[in-house]
Image 1 (tube, rainbow, N blue to C red):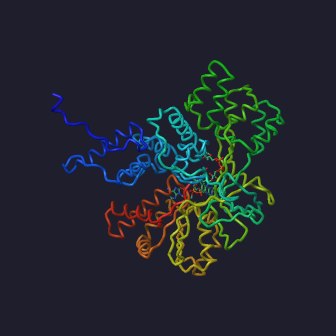
Image 2: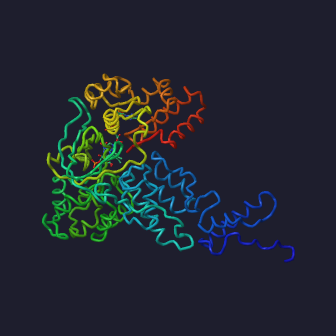
Image 3: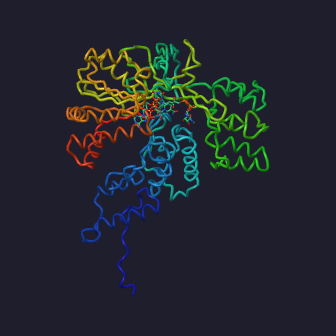
Amino acid sequence: MSQNLPPPLPSLVPDTAPFSDEQRAWLNGFFAGLVSLDGSGITPLSNDQAAALLSGTLPNGKNAEDDDGGAPWHDQTLPLTERMKLAETKPLRWKMMAAMAQQDCGQCGYDCKNYSGAIIAGKEERLNLCVPGGKETARMVKKLHEELKSAPPASSPTPLVELAPAAPQGAPGCSRDNPVVAKALSARRLNKPGSEKETWHVEFDLTASGLDYTVGDSFGLFPSNEPALVDAVIKALGAPPNFPIGGRTLRECLHDDVSLSPAPDMLFQLFSYITGGDRRKMARALATGEDPHGDAATLDVLAAIEKFPGIRPDPEAFIEALDALQPRLYSISSSPKANPGRVALTVDAVRYKIGQRARFGVCSTYLADRIKPGAKVRVYAQKAHSFGLPADPSVPIVMIGPGTGVAPFRAFLQERQATKAPGRNWLFFGHQRSGCDFFYEDEFKAMKDAGFLTRLSLAWSRDGDQKIYVQDRMREVGRDLWSWLTYGAHIYVCGDAKRMAKDVELALVDIVAQHGARTPEEATAFVGDLKKKGRYQQDVY
Ligand SMILES: Cc1cc2nc3c(=O)[nH]c(=O)nc-3n(C[C@H](O)[C@H](O)[C@H](O)COP(=O)(O)OP(=O)(O)OC[C@H]3O[C@@H](n4cnc5c(N)ncnc54)[C@H](O)[C@@H]3O)c2cc1C
Ligand SMILES: NC(=O)c1ccc[n+]([C@@H]2O[C@H](COP(=O)([O-])OP(=O)(O)OC[C@H]3O[C@@H](n4cnc5c(N)ncnc54)[C@H](OP(=O)(O)O)[C@@H]3O)[C@@H](O)[C@H]2O)c1
């Protein structure tokens, strides 16, 4: 019988190649399949193939661990569950990426791919830096990190190539880990009376900071918490405000160092250790992401303490259970060429109410309400991930920025005006009401009158019975937009990530299909190609 069996397959992967047994078996099967496709049986690997294997590279030039299969989860509009499903058959490295919010917003100091890569490579220990992903992402990242730590070496191969650079430290002022000090200059409200929005134009003096930036970059700053909220937390804790913690007081720690919203899992875990009975069960449930009373999403730190009346954690343990207060990013709305030594931001103040208590966005209200002219703030410039003016100043640009999304386009226009760039400029701006929400109206109108701003298309969503959005205006002038595209225009989109960015992209696909005489599939591929070529750039949040 044994004489009728085919001879065992020779190993096509050299024993010295840096693969686990599992990977070696998979690769042997893969190559055996490849080389026998023409029916000629197994042929030895070429020297190049063997060399590629020795360096851990697949024949398509990719490392086995590096092949993300096109990263289908890299879409900020997909919920976490769908992103994880798309990555479920992929190595842990890509599941980790899928857990991130996919905005490439830079708040963590990386983009989504490099932050996840840095965690997997053990170069980044902070697992809760994905701000747009919130607690959902933080929990998933923690779970995947546990898997990474507990996986046997065979199923958790050492990364074969550098997965990601360490967090870029750079020169002072160039990263969140190396901020500099800037001086607050002014904050003025951009909406006129009658507006439902509260948006501020905020300026900082950078002269003493040495900080430099390019239009398209974002400005990072470290806020502090609202003093009234800090005092309410201290009162609810029943602790003395000057309780000493590591050379600082409890009040100082709460004001400057920790996030007071949302309540982290660790806080509920701490509560579960120091309380009993049903309260312990409730704390445990909340610590694992359950929502026993349907209010978990509303629990900031104060509401969490109030949910466990009389709870008295040790102040130091309490501070340790909270997340660090993260910096926030704002698109820069000025050009250093037009305003040397200064930077401007366009900030929407986040205020809302839950139950009887008003809640305030930490940083936006810090900028709107609390910093006074002359105040010193820790800041940095976050380099844009592929968001900037074309290198050739004669290239036409189309900018689509409703609401605060207009910020980087004010900067682009200032820059192109200061440098006398000959390229045509087209701005789509939209907001609620023309009478009170037309940010920088005088500036844009003056640019238009001067012939520098070639076209200004405006969309007001609450002026009439019908909502008009920027993408409606785009469709109305689709033929002209297509014409600009044929002249090589770059398209830029900034603002809301969840709805607007997707709708604007869909409108552009429709315009390309209609005026570029393409099928919907071809139009989608066309826009995809614009993205790859850097001619469709987004800065969304
Ligand atoms: C690259 C980038 C550029 C950005 N540029 C700008 C910009 O130019 N201008 C700008 O204004 N912002 C911009 N942002 C957003 C900005 O970074 C902050 O996220 C924003 O100001 C809110 O921060 P905050 O600290 O004020 O609020 P936080 O304290 O972080 O609170 C915000 C959170 O409050 C909750 N929340 C908000 N509203 C409600 C509600 N109605 N009901 C219940 N919960 C609610 C949500 O959980 C929300 O995430 C940008 C973000 C990125 C990543
Ligand atoms: N992380 C945060 O806490 C935070 C803080 C600030 C801003 N943001 C995000 O940034 C976005 C920008 O806020 P903003 O105050 O500048 O303005 P905004 O809320 O985006 O509103 C700007 C204009 O866009 C319109 N709009 C709404 N849905 C749209 C869509 N699908 N397509 C095109 N336009 C649409 C609005 O109309 P209507 O409102 O009349 O429908 C309004 O006229 C917010 O939506 C939010 O997602 C987040």
